[in-house]
Length: 155
Image (tube, rainbow, N blue to C red; front, side):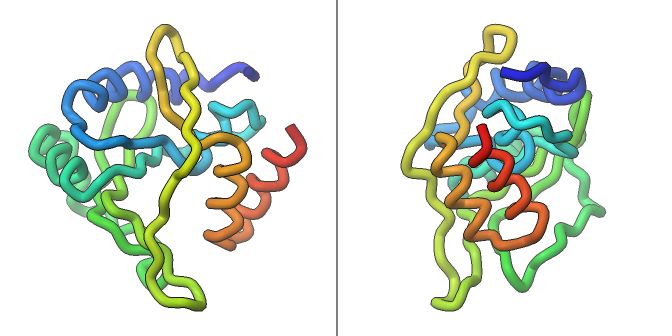
């Protein structure tokens, strides 16, 4: 694995042990952080988590002082979820509970079928397997996602 940014390592250390302790359903890191954890040379701006709606609500209750109530995510016409953005050391953490993507068939649940675990300083972090990341990023269809899919394909 390539060298991870200090900011990504910091947010993982501050949040992931709590996620393991408090989330009752499976959760997984997605987006740029997931690509970085898979070995892609990409800078993550935040730690994106795909969780159940119940776990998203649980985290909102767990971290009220960290909640960024003023942040509004882009892409509401394309994405919907029980969303929350939290301020953590290193970088923000964004939770997407029950994430759905609007495609040509209407709203579709974003699901991860194949999960692998990456060890970051002794902390197990679940991410989609490489092919799953590529599939998810391509389904999102935004230029930044397609570029990350190409980088993952090149690994």
